[in-house]
Length: 281
Image (tube, rainbow, N blue to C red; front, side):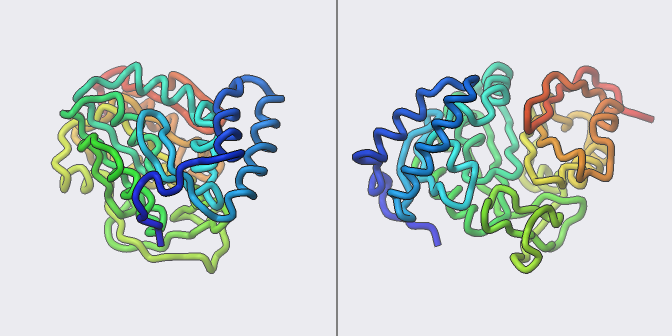
């Protein structure tokens, strides 16, 4: 259960605070800096003894638990290393009234990052199926004044109903509706919706960008969405975790048929923009 003590209860102090300050200043492109960050992070985590930390990252308040979630470790100690190219693209492309869908939102790093630089007319959906992680997400949203982020507790899949989510206890960010490196006994049943139905229920009529990080199930979501969604709903920008070794569909080729072109590739993600409105016959 997520600790709901007031924000600031777990403010960094002492050596842990100095380590967090130091690791945030390490250069992103340096291999030596990354090695140093890993060493200092391990030291700080051992000193925390299971406690979270309350910090501000990307212009948003967050309570981070750097133990069983790689996302939280990175955002806490090395936020500059966390998807810098992807975040730069969103900041460049999204307007103040942007509609942004964060599918596989984890603890809200992307959603809150976008909320911090967009305006009060923005709409941000943060979709996260894991109950424990969803509690962390809603806590983080509640510590900020944005009022534009809505958390939704469900999985997005190829059909609605209920499905089994396979939990990775070592890294909650790698939990999936597919068995991908997780312990088969660590499961939870969660509600599921299609992306089209999610947009319909939330009255989403346009999407400026989607970040999709669902550990190899991106094809299950996008294939029916591209097929069934009206052209007006197709997002201008897509950031997709590269799960090509787990996909049953060649997603880049499929996206190309729907007017998308790949504009960037990082170690973890593929980025696409919709270059033309044409749809396949």
